[in-house]
Amino acid sequence: MIVLERDLCFSYGAGAFQLEDINLEVRAGEVVTLLGPNGSGKTTLLYCIAGLYRPQREQVLVNGKEVSKLPRREAAKIIGFVPQDHHPSFPYLSLDVVAMGRAAHLGLLGSSKRRDLEIARRALEAVGAFHLADRIYTQVSGGERQLILIARALAQEPKILLDEPTAHLDFKNQVRVLSLVKRLVEERKLAAVLTLHDPNLASMFSDRIALMNNGRLAAYGPPEEALTAQLLRRVYQLPVHVHQLRDVRLIIPEFKEVLGS
Image (cartoon, rainbow, N blue to C red; front, side, top):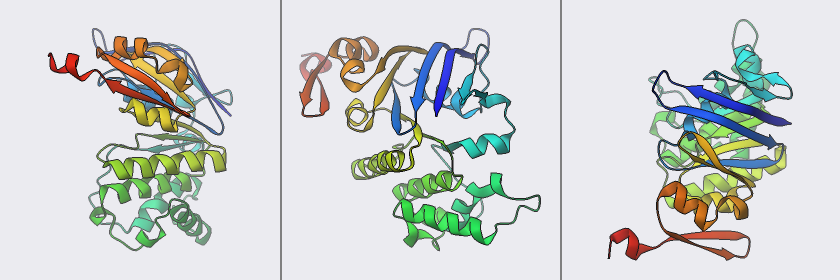
């Protein structure tokens, strides 16, 4: 299983922000993290991979198939997309929200079958949130909502998981959700593409990192190659020190220079 983008380019219009010459490969059982400053193109690239945006040049290929040209139902069977924000107007039960992930597998009438509900229940169990099945989705916490959305994506039975997993989450829930995603990717042999803001979390949970800057890739490789002090200083315009602690790279800003003292 490979997600391949060959010199991908995307633009919102003349004179607007654009992605240029993006080349990525994401394999089964691997977590690739898009990392970079605000406005560097992380979410735009994620939307291109999801097929929500269509690149102007070249394409996103999954097992040789161009995602943006697949029928929506077929794409949904391949890619499970976890949105950053999800606020339905109707107070669905959490189990019903997860069962919506089965939409691509339903018949013409679109009603959930017993098997689809069972898959939804198992997805909630997989993320440790089965106790939320009968809770009103709009009344659960931000961390719980993220688990439910991941369960919904798993219910699609995808090959690729796309996620912006730590938006609006506290430190405990960030680690909890990223640990969960890492485990699911390894157990189910998914290919995962995440977007993160914290280089330390990216170092802990990523197999490879795509360090982005102004719509381009500044680096792409394992944490020890992508998270060097020189690259991070150039991309973030921030002086940093990088320390290797066992298998994790720890990135620390130079506070005196940041504070101007």
